[in-house]
Image 1 (tube, rainbow, N blue to C red):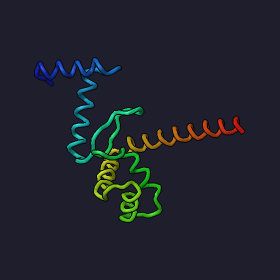
Image 2: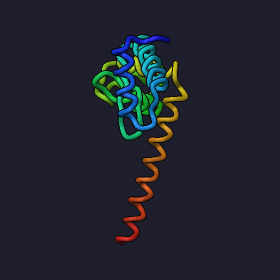
Image 3: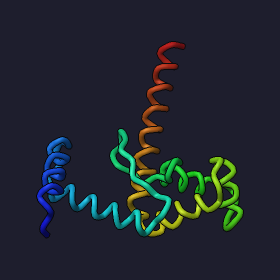
Image 4: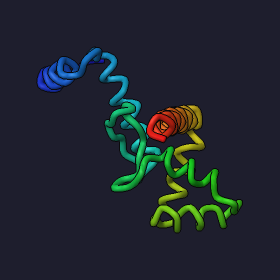
Length: 134
C-alpha cells in the first residue's frame, strides 16, 4: 500500500509517539476502526486506562451498556427500555450498542470480564482494609 509523503510522515510521527506502536500496526488499527465507524454510526473509539474501547458518541462505553442490559430483569424490547432508563440514554443508542456487540462479542465480553475482575479486586482490598480497621 502506498501513502502520500505527508500522510506517511504523520503516520510515522504518531507511531513514534505511541509506545510499542509500529507504522503498520497503527495503519491496521486505524483502518479497522475506520471500518467499524462506517459500519456502526454512533460508535467512536476512546483511549483510557484499559486501552482503546468502543463507546457511544458522547456516551458510555459499549461494554457498560451491554453489562447493564444483561443485568436488568426485563427481556426483549422491555430490556432495551429499562437499560435506556437506567443509563439516561435513548433506545436507539442502546440498539447501536447491541448491534456493535453482535459484531464484536468477544471484544466486549473481554472488557466486561476485565471490569468485573477489577471490581472484585477493589472490593477485596476494601474488605481487607475494613478488617484491619475493625
